[in-house]
Image (cartoon, rainbow over all chains, first blue to last red; front, side, top):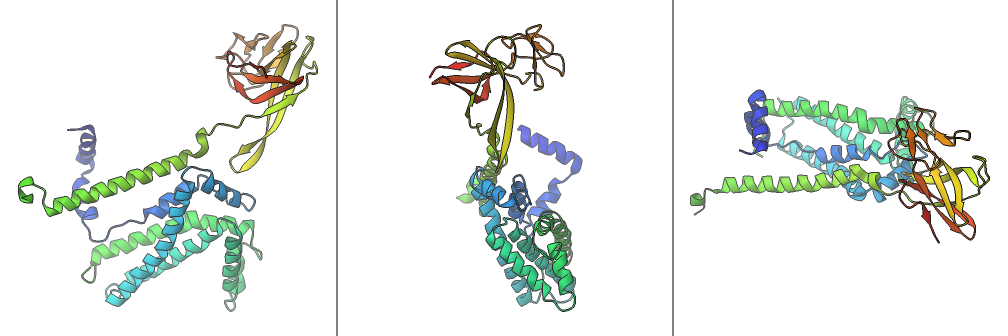
Length: 205
Length: 171
């Protein structure tokens, strides 16, 4: 028996996870895997600085001068795009199958929250490279929020951290992107998965 | 046939999936580790800086206290760097530059003219005029800047080498 196996059995003897991992996690029809974004994102925070003076140069540095920079940032970029597509495909499938109907309405609602969170990730992450595209996209995006009747100006100011887009906007978007949105997403994901385990998948997969 | 070898379809798929997953994990793991290590081991660019000897250190002619000020890359920023060296002329074409950074914890040593030694103010490390340890905690002699003389101009490298390394370069 080799060392790895012995360590595995030593841990398993105490935690008794083997049967659980085998049957309850790996053998289920819906795998949990959206780690690409979390992992590449975490690693990029090694180099990123959310400051108007430095953000662009830091991103340029981490992309072109750090080994594997283009790969890591590329994976983050394309996974983000793929994530949006996948989320919509998932939603369409659930809609066509009628899987949102009783008793699964609550799970549909948590799914809508997750959709909003994913779009929040996309919106806040887009600003972080602090290039022309990022700046003007956020300018337009927050201006659109400003057109909401009555509360529009409040939303705009809260999003930008003031009337103008600048350092305050960048830091709050960064914090949302790497701290608050991930936390909320984890909470909603757990709820989403717990409900699917409890209620089962509605139709043949 | 496959029943005999004990590799049925289910087992084949399992092994295949584990192999592919393992390969992906290893490859992306290597990429992530490379990324995380990043520029940690990139060699620093050596620059040569011209200095003037002005006898500021002691009574010996051409023994000078020289401040090297230069810019260096700090990730995506440019930072200003500063280091202090004691430079003395040994012969017409030989100059020695002793780094003033104590080899114990990097405090700046000062030249004691009366005792003809370098003293570290932090933990009382003492070195002789060649930078060799006399007493105190320093584990190694003072490091040296590489030097070279071109057309009577004295140039110091920003990089230091251990004493015993290349202390002088003829051009």
